[in-house]
Amino acid sequence: MPFLGQDWRAPGQSWVKTDDGWKRFLEEQSNLVNDLSSYRNADHNKENFLNNLKYDVAAKKRRKDLLNNNTKTQCLHQEKWIYVHKGSTKERHGYCTLGEAFNRLDFSSAILDSRKFNYVVRLLELIAKSQLTSLSGIAQKNYMNILGKVVQKVLEDQQNIRLIKELLHTLYTTLCTLVQSIGKSVLVGNINVWVYRMETIVGWQNQLNEIQIRRPPVKGMTLTDLPLCLQLNIMQRLADGRDIVCLGQVSSDLQVLSEDRLLWKKLCQYHFTERQICKRLILSDKGQLDWKKMYFKLVRCYPRKEQYGETLQFCRHCHILSWKGTDHPCTANNPESCYVSLSPQDFINLFRF
Image (tube, rainbow, N blue to C red; front, side, top):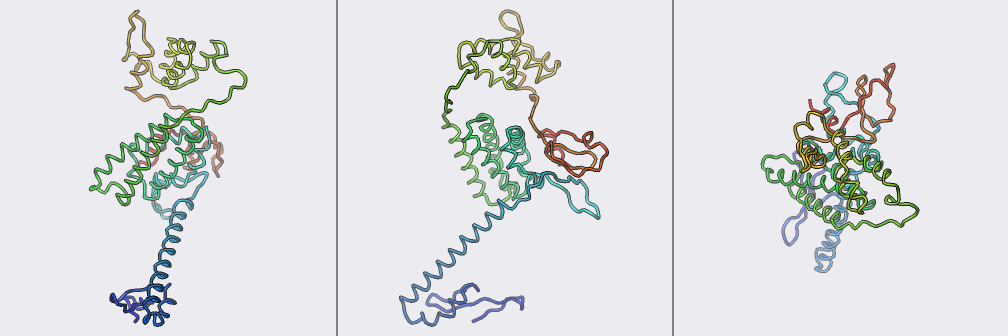
């Protein structure tokens, strides 16, 4: 018995009368509907027919879900550079948003490069703090996919563990706040999806907490075998005071070097200005400046200087955004003079119109 909808061009729907009443069957099951008469008089055949029908529907649903998941996660445009347009003209309509740039630039490959890893992690942290709700649904899903790859890389390499722990803590705190404000429609998608994502984040945090650092086999000289002047020189290359404190816990010699006043003085002068330092002076019991305590006090008051191996760069002439070292079709006479390196915060500010 066909039923035509409001659109007369529609193929209609097939309805069949059963013991439980009228039931609608899909077009893909029309071959089964045609054979319904052969099952109508036999109870056991009817059960087989319904079981086969349910199996076909379940199998098709699984194939459809798999296709949708693959389409959303693998078919993103990964490009080396994109054009950032901030206006709508006759030739180009719309704006380039933060979510669009996040989807199109190849961040998945960037996390595999040690020179870009810290940059991507810092960008993920800034997005988690304030820009998560500005991303589209597919951009938010892409964000979680990239974050999952970052966590997996850290679990395999056992490096940058503290950095990722801080990122997950920031993201989880933000999501807790947003989920409580779900009545304001600040999140894209079903609330159960975000609850599941929060559970995933907790699972990642537990995996990171259970990491046991594997001591590599000793081959040749180690850090403690080097002269003290070289050990101190290596410490001066560390940009985070927490790394210096952790390194000082390895041995008694490193503990002495980690308390060097000149080491902490250079670290303070590297991250902070003279004016900031003068506002946070701390004297020790001996009447000297305690640079170590001053550093941790300055960190709580001012942002530290950020340094990355490779960054995103913006061409002021043709408005192209790309990774540093990537060539793009620039029409300037001297393209190198048009490049501007973008910090993670500058990247976000680029899309604030």
